[in-house]
Length: 173
Image (tube, rainbow, N blue to C red; front, side):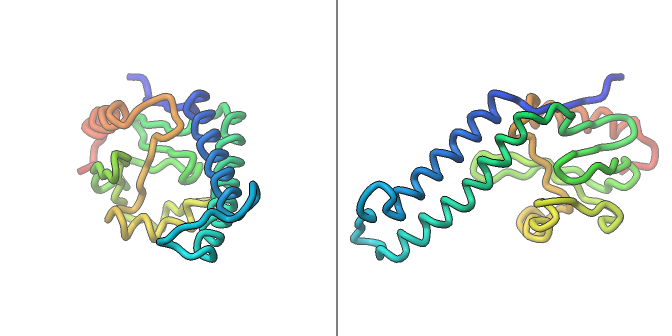
C-alpha cells in the first residue's frame, strides 16, 4: 500500500506569498508610507501606526517563509505504515504506537489534524512551531496541530490515510 505524501503546492504557495505582500503594503499604508496616516473615528493614530508596523513585520516574515517554500521540493508530510512525519514539526517519524488519538479541529474554516501523543516529550518540535507549540496545545487540546495549508493534498485525504494505516498498525488505539 502506497504512503500518503503531501508536497508543496506551487500555486497555493504563490497565492499565500502574494497575500502576505498585500498585507505588508496595507501595513505600509497604515504607517503613512503613501501619505498621511489614515484617520479613524474609532481608533487613535498611534494604534493604527502600531498595527501597521505589526503587519509590516509579521507579514514580511510570512512572505519570506512562503517564498522560500517555493524552492523546497522535499515532501512536507508522509503518512505510512510506520507512522507520520510532518516536516514542519520535525524530521522525526512519529510511530503509530506513540499516537494515542487522532481528531480533527477547525477554526474559521481552517481545518487541522490533531495528534495526541503518549510521550510528547519524545517528539519535540523544531523551528517556529516549537515556539507556538504550547499555545497550539491550549487552543486545540492536542499535542500537534497538523495543517496541510500550502500542500498539494487536502485534509480529507490525509484523514483517510491515517484511518487506513492506523487500523493496520498493531498496538495503536
